[in-house]
Image (cartoon, rainbow, N blue to C red; front, side, top):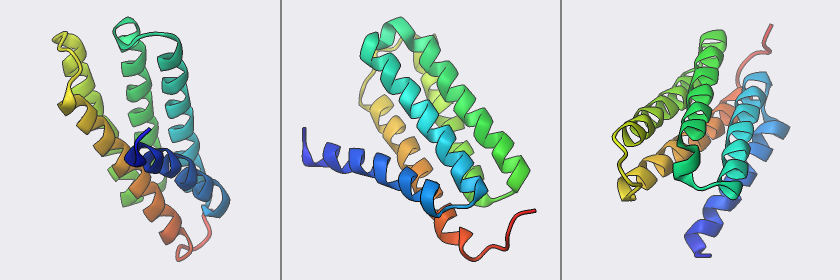
Length: 137
């Protein structure tokens, strides 16, 4: 495992934990959506190869983007819209690769990492700004 992989794993654990502990309701819901989708993807990837479950992974990505859309409409925060946009963009790239039967390459990996970084950064922004927001109704 490289140092970069270790840092990414640490961020994938630390940021959601901080959001669960220090965030308010929107941050906690967004965190749970992210954790469920990431966990489901990790479990599926552990048991099967990508080309066997491409449709399942695409469904997980789509449900994650759709969940962020519902959350963005409900709470109307820009950081949630950024999460939704990142996952919708990644969903589009994932669907293109799957529909065209293109083998996974660096562009796919980079788009996946960018989407994850945007989601984690947005979640961090949500936690930081939650301290200045008034209590939700």
